[in-house]
Length: 229
Length: 192
Image (cartoon, one colour):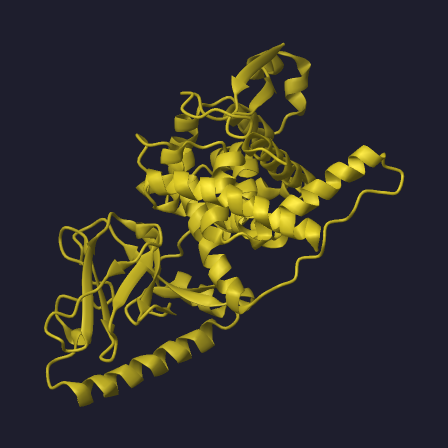
C-alpha cells in the first residue's frame, strides 16, 4: 500500500522536474499495524512521519527545534540547492560545502522566514548569497578543479559525442561571468520564473530577462571559441 | 548552427546531468547538516562561551581574542588622539554585554573609521546586502541602527569596500572559509 505525496510544493507555486520531485512513501499507519513496525526504532519512525508532512508543518516543527523535521526539508531541497551551488560555483567540493552551509544557516535563521512567502525562494537566496561570498573568496584563493572523467573506451560514438558537447557547455559556463551565469542556472536548472530569479539575485525582472538573453548569446560564442581552439 | 531553443534544452541536459553525477556526494547531507546544527546551536552564557573558546577543534579562538583585543586597544588610542569627545564604546546606551539595543530592538552598529569614505554592514539579516552606516557629524564614528527581531545574526562591515569581520561589539567571531564574521545575539526581553 502506497501513498504518493508531492515531494516539494504542496501549493503548486513552482513546477518543474527539480522543484517538484515526487516522493513515494509507504503508508505509516499500514506499517504500524503490521509486524514490520516492531523493527522500526523511534528515530526511523519519526523520520517516516516527517516524510508525510507538508512543508509548513515541517517548517513549524523545525522552528520548534525538531532537527529531524529539518532533515526532511534538506532531503526535499538538497538536489535543487546543490545544483544551484554547482551551477554558480563550477566547483564540486565548494558546491557541497556551500549547500551544507546554506541549510545550516537557513535553519539558524528560520525564525526570520515569513511563512506567507515561498520557502524555496528564501532558501535559494541564502544559497546564492553564500555562493557569491565564496566566489569572492575564490578570486583571492583559487583552486583548480580536476577535469571531468571522460567516458570509458567501450562507449558508443554517440555517447562520446554527447559527452563532448556537455564538456564544451560546462567549459563555456565556467568562463561566463557570474552575473550572466547565475540567472541561467536559476532558469534552466531550478526552473524559476523571471520574478523569482530577480528576487533571489536582487535585480529587477527586466534585467533578469536581458541577462538570460545575453548570457545565452555569450555562451554560444564561448562554445564556438572552444571548438575553434 | 544551434538555435536558442536547442541551447535551452542543451543547458537543461548539462545542468541536470552534472548534478546527477554528483548525487553520491549528497547521500548523507541530512546527517551532516543536523550534526553541524548540533554543534552550532547557540551556546549562551559564560560556561558555553568558555567551553567554545577552549574546545580543541575550535583552535585559534584564543588567538582571535588576542587579535580583537589588540585591535580594540589600537582603536581606543586612535580615538583619543582624533577626538576629545567621549568614545561610543562608553556610550551609556550600549549595554555591558556589548550588545547595543533599545527597547524596540533597534540594534546599533558602530565602527570607528576616521579615514573611510564609505562604511556599510552586511549580514544575514539583510541577505548579505550592504546597509550603509552614516557619520553625519564627521567624527569618524560610523553608525547604523537596524531593527532586528530576537535571534542570532552574523554580519561584517565593509569599510571602503573591504571586508572587516571582527566587530569590537560582537558577542563572538566565527571564521568561515578563512574570513571572519561577527555574531550578535538579540534577546527578546527588555533590550537591556
